[in-house]
Length: 438
Image (cartoon, rainbow, N blue to C red; front, side, top):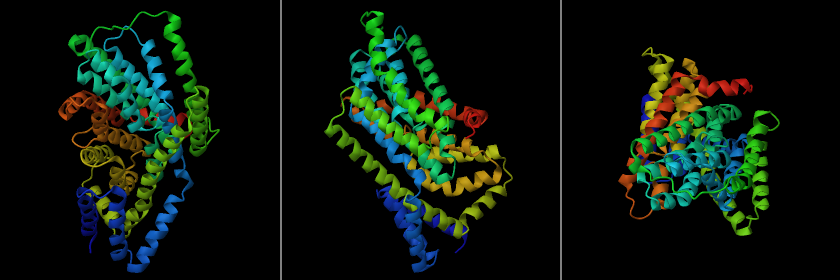
C-alpha cells in the first residue's frame, strides 16, 4: 500500500466516523486500531499502540491542562467573575455602546483568569446579555461582543488549548502562552474600536447611556474590591512564568491556590461549588487526555507508512515559499474549523503541518499563534462553531440562530484581520517570547 492510499484511508475513515457522530476520542482510537494492526504489524502494532497511549498521557508537561481548567472553574462556580463584571460596568462610562465595550473589557480580563472559552462566553452571556437586550441594544451589538471576547480565552494565558498544542506539536509551552498576549490585546482593541464606531454611525444599535449618576467612590470602590485583587491571580500565574520562577505546571498550581484564596476572601467558596468545579474539570480533562492518548499512534502510523514524508515531498515539489505554505495551512485550518472541533483540527493536521513547517523554516511560535487564532475563529464559524451554540443556550428563546450568525460576522472579520497581521508581521507573536528567552 503506497503512502497516498494510507493517508486517504486514515483521514477518510476519521472523517466518516466523525460524520456519523462518534466522539472525537473514540473516532481516533478506532482508526488507530485499524492502522496499528494493518500498518504497524498486527499484534505487535496493537502492543505498540498501547505503549504509545501510556507514554503520551504520562507526560508531565500535560499537567497544566487540568490545573488551568480547575482554576477557571473555581472562579466561575464561586461567582467571583460575575462580581468583577458588575464592577467593570460601573467604571466604563461615556462610551458609545457602553455595555458592549464592558463586555470586551470583562471578557478579556476573565479570559486571563480562566483559560476557558466556553466558561467565558457562558458567564458573559448569562450576566450581560439580558441587561443589554432589555435596554434596547441590537442583538448584533449585544451578542457579537460576547462571543468575540469569550473566544479570546484561546489566546490569552492560561489557555488550556495552548498547553495542549505545545505538548502535541513540540512547541515551547511557556513561549506559546506568552506569544498570544500581543495578538489578544490587538484583537480586544479592534473590537472596542469597532463597537464604538458602529454605535456612533448607527445610534439605533445601542441606546443612549442610561447609567445612573454615581460618585467617584461609588464607581471605583467595587472595582478596587472585586477586580483589582483578581489581577493578583494573573500576576501569580503569568508573573511566575515570565520571570522563570515557576514552570507552566507550577504556575498553574499556584493559580488554583490563588483562585481558592480569592473565593475565600469573598466568602463565596462552598462545598457544592468546589464539587461542581472539580467534576467539570474531570470531565474536560478526561476527554482531552483520551484524545492525547490517540495522538502519538496516529502520527506514528502516518510516519511509518511514509504518508507524512510523501506529502511533504509532494508539496516541496511545487517549489512554494514558506509564506505560501503557511497561507495554505491557514486556508485548510479555516475550512476544517467550519465543520469539526478544535482538538480534532489539531489531531488531523499536526502530524503533517509540524514536519512540513520545519522543512521550510516556518517559525514554530508563529505557526503556534496561527493555530490558536484559527481555532479561535473556528469557535465562531457557522455552521458548527461551538460558541454559537453556547450563545444560543444562554440567549432568550426568541433569538434565532440566523441572528447569532449575523451578530458574529463583523467580529469574525476583525479576527481574520488580526490573523493576517500575525502572518505579515511575525514579530507580533515572537517578540515577547524572545525578550523573555522563551
